Length: 432
Image 1 (cartoon, rainbow, N blue to C red):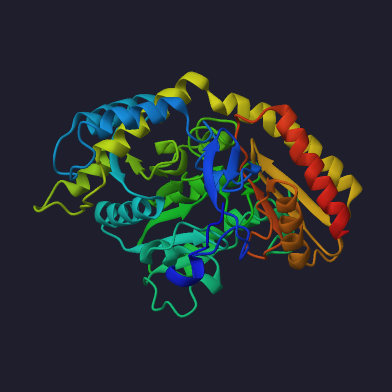
Image 2 (image 1 turned 90 degrees about the horizontal axis):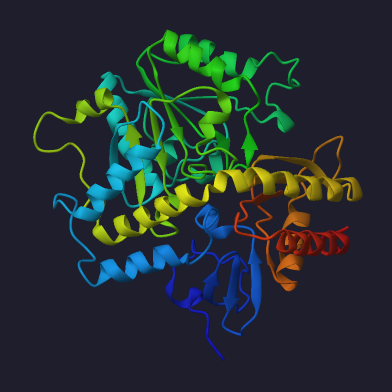
């Protein structure tokens, strides 16, 4: 079957494919496996950037929900009340922890972030925001303004005013040159100094990822967010956690913030929410939500935010998630993955760090373990070698381009994990 790639002819050059210029076009997906136009199968360890991590590709429950709804009514604007949207809101709020009891549906993660920023400013009547080095919250203007990575902002300015950043919890490459736990969580304590020296005392919200995903799947150390929350509460600043990658179980708990013993004021979710179909949500409390009550007209609007087709898919996804409890499987398989990856680390000096929670795992490649010089070229070669062997390996990622950012599906069998680890082993052997 001959299919000509249209990327070079029709798409903007920012549209890049996993295998680059290779003529690999995917036509089917099921569980943890993709099939290309030549019939070749690939185990996918990226899962469409986490969209298929919890229930896999093409889950029958989501497929049937879409089939049923599309014949009735597949699109209606957000200001039309529909049963799928109401049922989804009721179900979602019934399965999230207290105190979340209000929801706003949008189309993608970045849009939900924009709503959250707008709401935080309206509620607090303040305009400044604090985020972390290395954070990623999307590519829309407000989300990009929070971004803690210069290359993705170059040529895009001016960004939103009033954004302050502090060093992140990147323990492997501590920006303060310290080591955990002897560091006494100095990176978190710097928030107090930043509020005092670098803001106008008009900070509305602290925005963060509970695991820095795009930066390379970097989890926060124990105690970090407790320290952050203590400082925020002292200064009456909202905590907004972006759970777009982590909500519903990829880290081994239903929500990642549960690992840290704190509860944020706002969370966003997307990716797995729609079972891989495009929908996102902002969740907050009734008190904060009331900031959008006045004046008329509504302060935020998005045409397709609660469209019935995506709502039906998301409802089926959540019902499946609550039935299958993928966070339990993520915890189990995460340990299995980490054990296998650490064996590879013992075997190959190019592997500098293995970290993560559940199946959200980062593997960082270095040219030298002492200097920690990023092994970007090796990481890119590793991705290509794995691809030749039928493995979609998200290597060449992270802000240094040297990380493998794993978000494998929890529907994988241990046989498939062993296959994946063997392909990684074979690929490391080639690049080493």
